[in-house]
Amino acid sequence: MRVGEDSALRQAVLEIESHAAGEGWDQPPRLYALVPTGDLVRAEPAMARSLGLDEDADPDSLTPIAQDDVPAERPFEDTLAQIMWPPQVVGCAAVVERLMLPPEAEDGLPDDARDLETYAAKHPDRQDVRIVAAVTRTGDAHCAVRMRANPDDLLEGPDLVPALTRLIAGTLAD
Image (tube, rainbow, N blue to C red):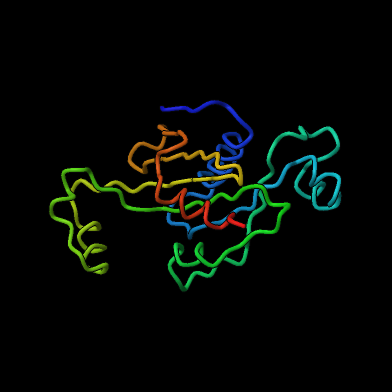
């Protein structure tokens, strides 16, 4: 396990990953707004209560709020490119399941996207992974990756999935 410095962002990623793990595999991509817990409790007390938060909640923590309107009919990466958050959202997290190939498989990668999907799906060394990646407006990032074949192992750190964290950071640009 590779662990970055403990932070509110890391704790939010671990909370989201635990929730995703409880839902099992073969889930659609999910998106979460990250808001400061103290701000949420003050500004939206009814919502905070519905999330199990009260005035005793750690005000410095981040509360993930699931976004229910993620379109399933288009690629998730395209959806991310269209999202912009209001200022009270200080971060964004995404949960995606992907096929991961070992580095030695890169030499045989086809250029066509459909051929690439087929190649990855049929590759004998592919790994099904669930990725939780989150970024804040300040540029902090944290990721957690769980492999289906080794569900007890969770890899985590700030730079495990840089392409996804860049896409997420783009949703937070002013």
